[in-house]
Image 1 (cartoon, one colour):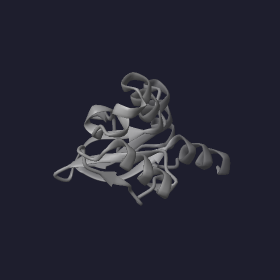
Image 2 (image 1 turned 120 degrees about the vertical axis):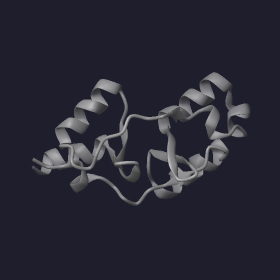
Image 3 (image 1 turned 180 degrees about the vertical axis):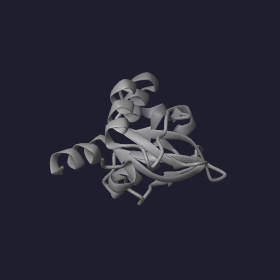
Image 4 (image 1 turned 90 degrees about the vertical axis):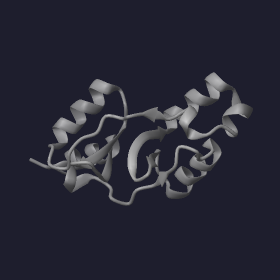
Length: 126
């Protein structure tokens, strides 16, 4: 069975909760990723995804959202998965939760992120 460790990305885009939403969007665009991981004092406290951008702009309206910190629009305390979990377990967790990005934690340490695209690629190549 293919594990999350085999398909996850370790090239992480991280930001602080105080980062402005526009800065986070720029970081996502520059890195060509659909999410940024939000760290505070080295600990994962949230995730900010393309869907969070849309939700923030809808609920807060465009101008206030542009100058708001991520702490106002991020998903707090996101579900995570371990690196030794199977691709199937990760897929189930994402489908059950209705999201497309899953931080990978080894104990208390952030070691990667896996996306629905990563999982789909591993299945199609399998």
